[in-house]
Amino acid sequence: MNQVLDDIDRAIKDIAAGLPVAVHDDVAEAREAAAEQFANYGLLPNYQRILAHGGLSGPAEAVIVGDEASVTSQIKALFEAGATDVWLPPFPVGPDRSASRARTRALLKDLARS
Image (cartoon, rainbow, N blue to C red):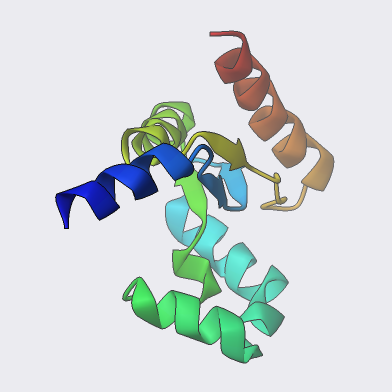
């Protein structure tokens, strides 16, 4: 059995994780925005299985949201869990969609440089 696990470990080179992200001070507001924007994913059987497997009730729970420190911590947790590649598409929150995306992109750029 250990040899099989060793072979699997050698075969796995990349583990990708992809979650929408928004840097926003009001987490509840960000989750509400996510619930609206990603509602259709909660209706798809494949996504329903993935969410259920993770113990999540819907797409709004499968996003990375919070202030800069919180989002940074959540992204680092993906890598600590074994992700080698991450895809973090920004989603807008609040009345100024451009400013919301800009704030998120600024953090992601800073993290990519470090």
